Amino acid sequence: MKLAGLLGLVSLVLLVPRDGAAAVRLGTGASYWLEHGGLFNLDLQVNTPIAKRLFVGGRFGAFLSTGSERVGIPLDLTLTVPIGGRVYLEGLAGPWLSFEGDFIRAHGAIGFGLRSGSLSFGVEAGWLSPSGVIGARLSWRV
Image 1 (cartoon, rainbow, N blue to C red):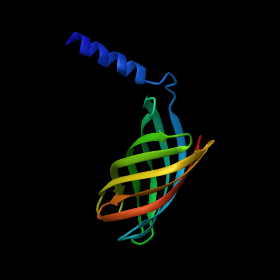
Image 2 (spheres, rainbow, N blue to C red):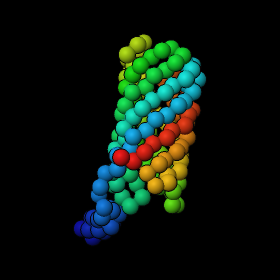
Image 3 (cartoon, one colour):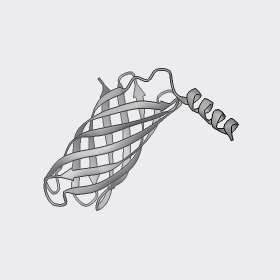
């Protein structure tokens, strides 16, 4: 039993990256929210490595929905996995707070994209209660 615990601890230490610096990105996005029309957002995303090829973070900012003229605050937890050199996969989930209508809306999405230097471009598909959402994102490392 002690050997299994020791092996687990050694495995965890080997997975943790040496460079623990957090990455901060300023992003913007344009999406189509199936029941409400256009959806635009501006946000700040902070990621930190938890393993060699796994990053966890948060994304928050402001959004505007053109179809129902709602303004709000998106709050998402993010899980990012770099694949190869510049390609990444990302999962997001969290509440989006709206100042009109339903105050809290559930959000979940998956996305993938390309990073080149400090610039990142990707697509995202998911759910923002009560319907699907699909869009594109552009972000810069700050």
